[in-house]
Length: 130
Image (tube, rainbow, N blue to C red):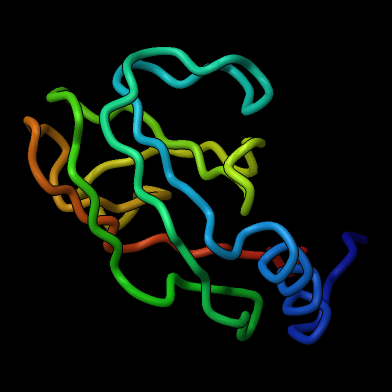
């Protein structure tokens, strides 16, 4: 039998990292393929860095962004993957796919861009029930 978590436990497991590590976090969007693990050095070119990201308090094991976040890309290119850094901008907390589709881990306004504004429109932290 698999372990199953209540919504209260899922919320508690998300709330600690959100409160302690992910408030005022930074999202870095890179070109190219993602490294095999989030512990590996980044690959590709850093296209845009979006700062000051916050997540809402978790509900039913999910915590969405509190808002949309805008930043200007410093280099043009095609978004390949993204890394969410902790509150201090020093450690990678989460690595995921990035793009314009709602199925992406980090949804941005454009997948291909030049030196222009890019908006982070959707990202949700999820604590699975199993």
